[in-house]
Image 1 (spheres, rainbow, N blue to C red):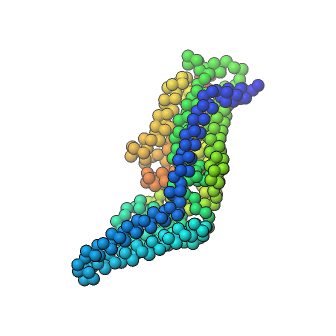
Image 2: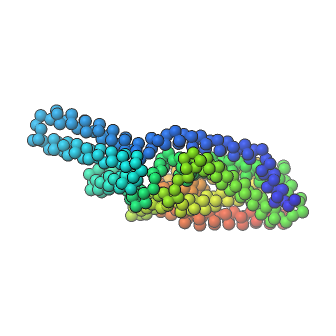
Length: 389
């Protein structure tokens, strides 16, 4: 049996590996269960119903104001209130049309009406009649682009707030939960594996009749197989479960992407399929970076606990620090730890939140590839120096 095969067998025979992965699956399964329970409240029909109820309350309130206005038509307030009532009544009619069209599966009609409503909202905000900030205007623009795409490609509606279909659920998991939880588990398992050969800070693997570079390459391959295999396996299982319950969803369904620029945000819709490919590439590079980083720390500290603590401080710790420490936000595009959440990077949400033009998919590829290469060279140099000693 080769050393590589032996290491692979040892990793997957370790009882902690399946236990950690099973706990992760259970936690993500609970998220899916909660989404299924609350998803009906986030359907297009439910949104229209909620808008109708809100508008109707506004109409009733405004009509009561008119009754108490003694001057009636002589005041400007009276005319403004009458105009507001008419506007709300028109909105109620539109929302009822959306509800009816969605119930009958006439998606093009429903999306066209929604697009028209968002167009009106955009006109109000752009004319300065609404005291909303940049975030509110950006949200209106996002919805406008979203429904503009769907009115030309009338696909069945899939909620992205509480998704239950296979593809949309995976994207939510990899945006809100999995990158952070899985990274902690991966760092723990990698530290156990890559420090296993050290006893009293002596590397017993050096006694094997193998070239030092072969040992490093074998350990790296096993680490990559462990992390990438586990990550893809968890995603695959959850995708299958969600798809069996609610369907896979469409890879042509739109996903909103924001590009932060000095002049303002550029918003567009891309297909879920093209978006997922970029996410997978960036997430894979992030996990490979974790492998080589832990391997380097294992060689430096030659002990489980310090290697694990430093790894946690460097990866999730530094990632959290960029959210809090303002100077780090300015340079975070060149920190590989900033790309922990691939979905937020590819969608441009993180670049928008940090107002960092360079924090994007392209810079992420460059930063992660360079970081992996630099740390690999450092590992080779440390092996060479140790061998010379």
